Image (tube, rainbow over all chains, first blue to last red):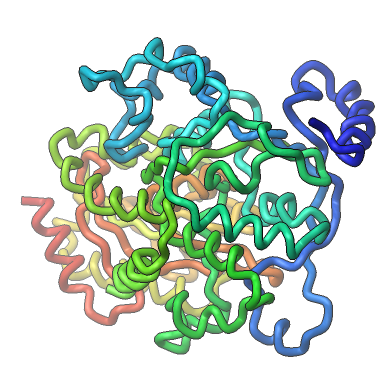
Length: 264
Length: 203
């Protein structure tokens, strides 16, 4: 069910959709307006002087929901290089699309049962996610874009953080269908509660810039975390730590993605 | 190695977290590399087919580095400290091989800075560092090809407000098929290990 706010966003996005034509479908992508937000990691000196430490995000299109098994299945059938039997080892570990495997151990997209089709695709490497988005003439969102979208202009921030922490603490289970929960203020679904998501620059260097010359400070778990802009946001700490631990060929049972696109 | 240590610490943090997704990826941490050796061709970075522009203006793909071992690093020319040191260390590896052996090795610098590092700027940088040898390649890519190569090699980087880049400084040794065989901390004063790795690939 759409909130009033998200209906409004959809209406606002509609004229832009008409301008950009059929390449972008209204129900698939939402225009995220430009704005400012405080990223979790900031330069130490910026944090210390406690003035506004926001960075500017340009407007961009964001997929309303994570990419589903159904959508990824269509991609794989059009791009056989990304079928589990063909994928190059440099582009994924051995668990690529594990949940598509049938009992004989051979990946068969036909074995996907109906209930899974609308669930987010998981067990995909960064390379596979990036290739999917490129094939749609899209790209992966940057970490800043993704966090900005989740941040939702600080709307209901405390509740959001609590909700995310609750989700992080529940045992592993297969993700449910996308759009089962309400959208956020931008009209974006499932940023938290279903899966973790790849970002284009998950491998960004997140330690404070002065860390290079000071030995142990390069370690995230050490003094690097002291420059975090909001020490209370443990959920953000978890996300940045998780991204930092990934490599491009990794896959995970709860790791999927969505695509973005420049507004221009 | 610094980078490895960092990952270990992160891993211990992840193990401490009772989170489902963290647990998944810990599991994966142990598996992928073991099976990787059986089919070298699909392990090759030459599977990436993005176009790069060399300092001489020619367009090429990573596969052009095939047939010889390659010493490779990601740098940017406006970099004041880390990158010049990286280049000096690659030159140190080159010298240690002797002219005859070095002629059978590619040396490649891939820029992290798609805006400022034009072919002209790369040529200037090469001149500044006394790089005249044909076996060297300096390359400009776009933001997407740079990110893809960095993710493939495991180089972390981030553009900061000044226009500079925070990045890992690592020198990689590829075999003639484009498979990473050795990594050295580019800040290390001793390049013997990297040099030996190249020599082993020339045998």
